[in-house]
Image (cartoon, rainbow, N blue to C red):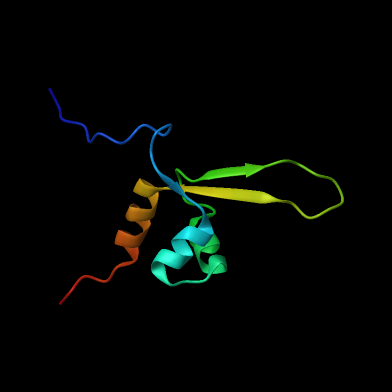
Length: 77
């Protein structure tokens, strides 16, 4: 039997807004949005609207945030 990594259920996993992650990592909200808007696993909520700018809400699961920040961290020499 193979062992698969257990991931938290998406329903009960903690999610963060871009503003929350920006505050935790001392980055701008725009930087967090650009890092995560196309990342697999991020919840992107939007409604199609004609003729006006789009409104999108990002919710970033803790496991996705950890994965991205680990990928961006330079290992110690």
